[in-house]
Length: 320
Ligand code: HEC
Ligand code: HEC
Image (cartoon, rainbow, N blue to C red; front, top):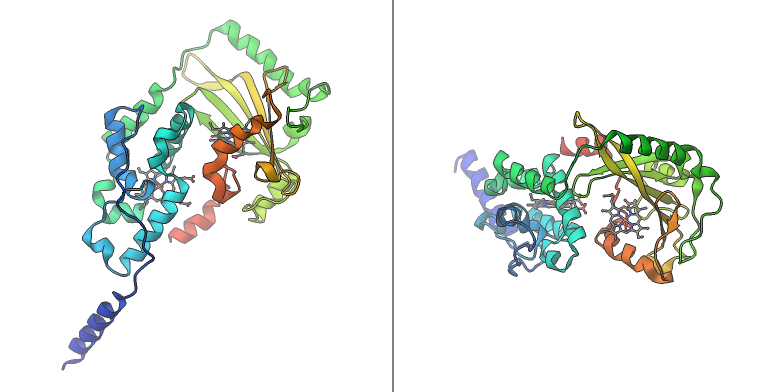
């Protein structure tokens, strides 16, 4: 045999042999229900482009069953389902459906989803511009952005100054019904993330205390160390005549305080929310925080925290 033919034969034998190595079996084919509460075309796009990895139903091609491709596909599906499972959509409250859709749209706009290396091979899952517009327009339709009048802008200006200056002297704020104390110092912390939620017309800033910021720098964020505190503030959006957006009325501040021993009942975090300019504690029972834990449950594998630091440079290196 010629040398090249020999190499080919060896490769072929190796290829046949590796077919005996298969990834662990997962259930690929449990039919997933349509997404309720959204237009049919939105459902169709998500079914087509996202369900393979984010629902109980994965449509595989013949080549997905070949080793080694099957290892990649199985791990995408496992990780994808863990991160977000659209099969559970119909059990979520409308607010959670809207925020998930918004989160999903962001991942599409940033080019992260559908996973580019998967979409390259499964080209039917790639979204075209028209499909992206359909998702965008639907997300926009969930909120109305009306221009704010001058009187309201002035009122809000005053309120914002009060938030910056006076609120910090406010020592009369009552604790949360579960005992968590209000923490006025959060305004001196570093902002670690912002979200502009066009689905419900709010602007949010997430602050982290020193321990949180240090943990981010040292990549110790799963689990977050005891002593970590996050403060998430939310304002209504003011829309100006030129379409620009600024913070409007102060809606609330929420805290998550990490103490894995003290807060074992609530997943290692103390939860509290104070509403409005007068910082009224939210909740009428000590276990009101069940509601917080439930909605943060999808982030279980990331210590119940949505905000994950974007280590952009190391991510880019991985892609290279
Ligand atoms: C080939 C499999 C695959 C496809 C197809 C796919 N995803 Fe993903 N997706 C993943 C994986 C794997 C993760 C987890 C990535 C991680 O944790 O870094 C993920 C994470 C996400 C997350 C973040 C969830 C979280 O909690 O961090 C969102 C949102 C998301 N995908 C939306 C979508 C949308 C929308 C589509 C369709 C347009 C889509 N994905 C298609 C595999 C996929
Ligand atoms: C409807 C779902 C939902 C509920 C209920 C909820 N959260 Fe969150 N929370 C989120 C989402 C989504 C984020 C990510 C940031 C964003 O989108 O604004 C978040 C982020 C946070 C953050 C910033 C840290 C992080 O995880 O990113 C804090 C602090 C927080 N929530 C506290 C609370 C508290 C306290 C309660 C209960 C009083 C609560 N949350 C209830 C969905 C929810």
